[in-house]
Image: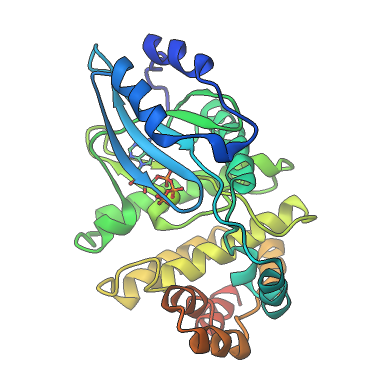
Length: 313
Ligand SMILES: Nc1ncnc2c1ncn2[C@@H]1O[C@H](COP(=O)(O)OP(=O)(O)OP(=O)(O)O)[C@@H](O)[C@H]1O
Ligand SMILES: [Mg+2]
């Protein structure tokens, strides 16, 4: 699994430490930042400028070296605390709650700090993932960029050849070998779904990205792993995470093979933690007409729960 290490971009090494990241993130101004990028780089393009307080850029320096920058941009509008409380009470015992994303850049900070640490671990152990070039563990991450990579979620919608599925399963096996029995929280992929696995065409290999962070605290490493495994199964079965065109048998091949890799103790733990989104939560969001939320929670509804339990038996 040896590969050539890319060097940090000289320009970027100069740029990032000199950029003033304020503790008061509301003052961080994306257009100021873009102006600096414009001065320093031959080219940059915005990949996303999400609502969760971060933006992503592809940077091309004067020597045509490319890198991928995830950058903390702003404080999202805080949730109304009362509404937040209601949601937490409603959802607290279902998998969907564990993975519900928090708005606000305190979350983005936590996310970036964890992402940098996890990527370092993965880089060190040789788990296929982008090299972490540079980070301040809080405001930005600079990653090795794969210009010809595509997410497995997108690929699998049109290419369901056994080659792709087998390659994916081999890569997941590598991850499981690494994660099984680990004592370190920062080895675990906490947002494992097929949009967070890339297939890199030139090297004909898969890469794990975007290791995520769980909302629920005070869990053991095994419990975190168990939740992450449950989450993976649900996302493969759900149309919210994977296009409708992906047939059931493809999804089931992935889930059953993944579960087969798990030790029995892990499967038992998962069965105990596995809880569907309660109907009253679905009803609550239906009334609010929050389509996206409904779709999200639907991914963890009773029928999916039954399927996941079935595979865990
Ligand atoms: N190192 C990389 N090389 C190539 N493409 C990448 C790389 N990292 C991320 N991407 C692309 O950018 C997308 C978003 O990146 P990532 O998953 O790290 O962030 P995210 O927090 O999920 O962002 P978003 O909420 O916008 O999906 C990925 O799904 C992938 O298509
Ligand atoms: Mg992602």
